[in-house]
Image 1 (tube, one colour):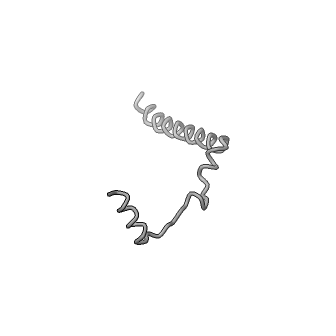
Image 2 (cartoon, one colour; image 1 turned 60 degrees about the vertical axis):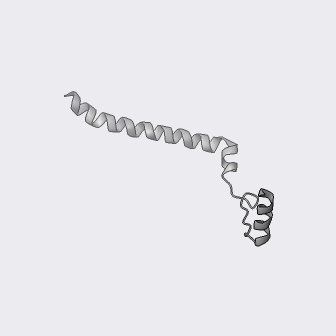
Image 3 (tube, one colour; image 1 turned 60 degrees about the horizontal axis):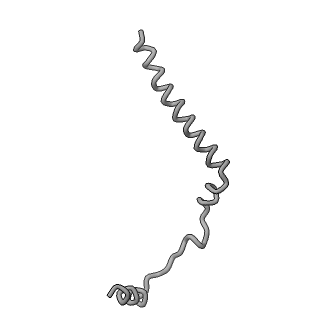
Length: 64
């Protein structure tokens, strides 16, 4: 009889615990002001510089 209890209790317990942890993480994310700001994209964080021959020559001269 105890196996019938465990067959539904264990998956239910795992599901509830995962949902509680996910809810806790969501609350932390929305209540902590610095976390939302750290995920924002800005032009300062994304820099696309094309690789040109002068950059390659400069880096090779620095390594020697």
